[in-house]
Image 1 (tube, rainbow, N blue to C red):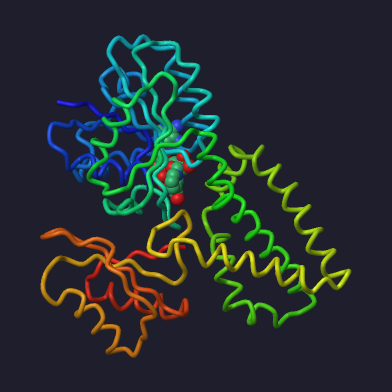
Image 2 (tube, helix red, strand yellow):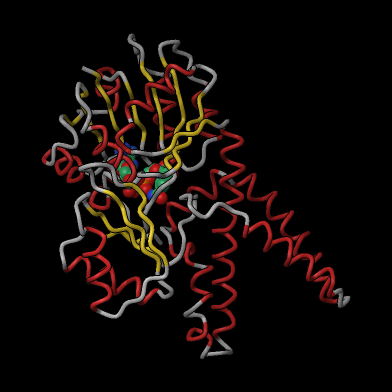
Length: 365
Ligand SMILES: NC(=O)c1ccc[n+]([C@@H]2O[C@H](COP(=O)([O-])OP(=O)(O)OC[C@H]3O[C@@H](n4cnc5c(N)ncnc54)[C@H](O)[C@@H]3O)[C@@H](O)[C@H]2O)c1
């Protein structure tokens, strides 16, 4: 029986635990700072046992999964250096930023410990165990960042342990991971927040502005509505890269400002054209780090008429669908239907209608 100890049973840890619990010959031990969370997870059979404390859980475990906020995860890794651990222990985490976590892991002195960092690139606007879902990671990218104390064997063990998630595993160094996520996720989040601040400032002199902002502006700033606590943690963990990206961005913006000041219309066109070409060439069918706009994810079962029923319900209420995609349906297993709408209103209305009809619906914000 493989002993798996999960610390932090929130959105990510809870969702992983739900998948691990489906596996045979695995005993899941859980620990969370929130007592009710642990009780709920135990009652639902997502964990089989509650650890009395961190050290007791570690001593029992073959695999340790740290799914707490990043600074806390680093603290737990540091605690491992002060414990006597006599059997092999594979350690992983789920942190959205990897460099500082890997630095702490490289300082582990006990040869029995092998650390392979992890980042399942899926989330929700919600937090905590009650938001956890077994299908959260379906088709999502799951990055593994092995430390120098680990090898392919430990990465393979984790892929097998998390196989029920249906995520797509990729291996990167922590530096590569942090640079790429800074470019496509962390920095855009910072810019989205700054655009919202700019609009808020202009609102003071232009009271009607918020009504104009309801459309496209809301699209491009949607990520600014995510959990500020999580993003504060991410910004600070990746602050060196963000600081240097801000330097590059300011230089770039000064260049564009000069195009406008000097009326260089050709240069301006080139700037916009290059951005369009790169963006248009991005893969459309993949689930990347930032979800597409106005989408809902509906769970469906592999049975005749399943898709027809969902579309029929929306058609009955005159809701028009912009795009529809089946993310995964295998025989007898729940699949996910991604339906896109042109407006946030249609997205919310559809979610409400489908939920009233007992469908499981997820919104990505
Ligand atoms: N939410 C996302 O979109 C997302 C996506 C990928 C990775 N992550 C990473 O996942 C990690 C957890 O984020 P989340 O979204 O699941 O947050 P969450 O708030 O839903 O869950 C965190 C859990 O950790 C518990 N916790 C806090 N301090 C603890 C402690 N000292 N000991 C034990 N348990 C403790 C909390 O009670 C909570 O249940 C973070 O490191 C984050 O970077 C988040």
